[in-house]
Picture 1: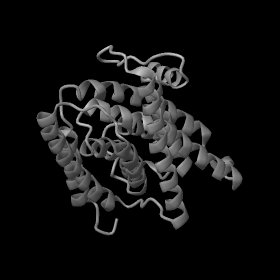
Picture 2: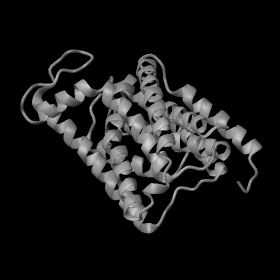
Picture 3: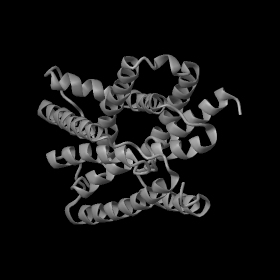
Length: 283
């Protein structure tokens, strides 16, 4: 298969799976078994390209949050049109910052300990199963709490910290899914609104993935390895990733307004079963 087509397919796979709770890293590792192994920079960079979709979709809210944080204007709830106040905006932005900081510290510890992402397929299958169970359990308890106490959109300090830790876990174990880990830890920790939990998870992913891309870029530049990267392929994959991620996020935000995440849990379980049946135990 031509190299440009390989890169295009990897970009499309990344764009579709980055925000759906089915694990983009896991899907990329699986796809690379047939499409060829890629560098860490390639995989992280196309993830960052997918994050651009969130920036485009939420740019009005991001600008409003920054302006309110600086005391220049109020923030209006995008769904109700109700004024949320400058205090809310500052609190929300600081919580995003705390969640990001927890992720940075956690990943630096992981790097220091020398932990690396396993590239075997079977561990990914196990992570897919665990994640599927995690999703069903989390949404079940969130629904029970919502029925008892009403919908809660608030992101607490506990949720902010746990979301940061969830990003670290997702970064260490392919198949976990960053979006699934963060969304459902927020639901378990008291935010019963799927929309609010998803939004916070997506927004905290912006600085996280951009920082990860910058870190890998500087590391490779320091080691003089940037010349080994196929920049044409990376560009093709990045554009494909950004476009497909935009479409996927738009669809997901509409979908969760009236549906649970159960379909994604079922998909994860089916994919895991196929992998475990077809892939040798040593792979």
